[in-house]
Amino acid sequence: MHVDLVGINEPENYFTGLGNSQLPSPTSVLLFLRTSKNKLQQHALQNRSHHRFVLAFNLGTEGHVHLDNLDMPFKPGQALLILPYQFHHFSKLASTKLRWLFCTFELEAQGFLEPLRNRVLGMQDSCSLQLDALLNQLLEIWRMPRAGLQAEQLQASLLSMLISLRCLGAQSEPALLPETDDNLLRTVNLLLAQWRARSVTVADLAGELGFSESRLRVLFKQTAGIPLGAYIKNYRLNRAMALLRTSALPIATIAEEAGFGSPQAFSRIFKKETGHTPRSYRQ
Image (cartoon, rainbow, N blue to C red; front, top):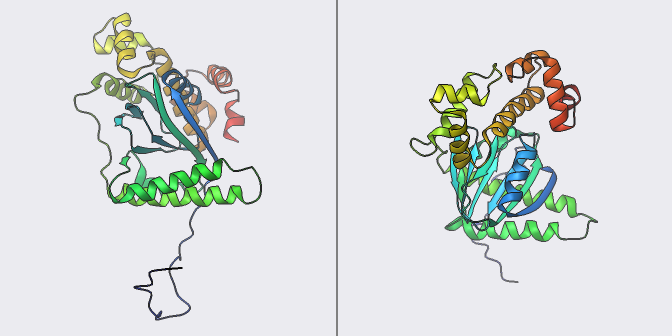
């Protein structure tokens, strides 16, 4: 065996070394592939916001990822981490066929991945071979029989990937709000944030923006790729889910903050859309 041992010197202290920090471990790891535009957008609407991390790898087909108020081009060879409770959906896909790989997981130390917030990462140059190897290792472990040490191997492999991406994220700039592209989507998001305690309708937005309701619906669908009514509903549910999981606010206050009007209406809609009552979801 030939091993390069250059730089391996005698330690100054035999009882103190590297690795003093407690590394978090990703748990409940899932891998799945999206190969069609309809399935990608459909599942994005169904899943809405949640407490899990979503790591996306674009293996083919350019598109756009909308995170909160941001619109970020997402090209083949790039990776993107969606943090828990980030309101997200996808649009402007260059083809109805695509190859986007998703890895979702949970992580208790959420601040560990904060350097990856709102950053599209290009897996290229010196990092490319390392990240390709880590991704292939992750996929190889996922395909192994569900036995033995597979779960631990999967967690270790994903952690290695996240550490590499975290280093890459620390060197890149966060995405900025678009100044010219998709001003309509940005404006709608800003209005929904300003009117968060109101039961906002399409008519409210149309009146504020100076469009007819029908014209606004058409323009928004062209811009965001989903109907405006569905977007408003998902925006409200996203805010409610985040408040239920991250705050101690009473459910009645959350219903008002998320624009559902009354606690009764909130509970009814929330149960219909998520399958859980607000109380059971919080627990």
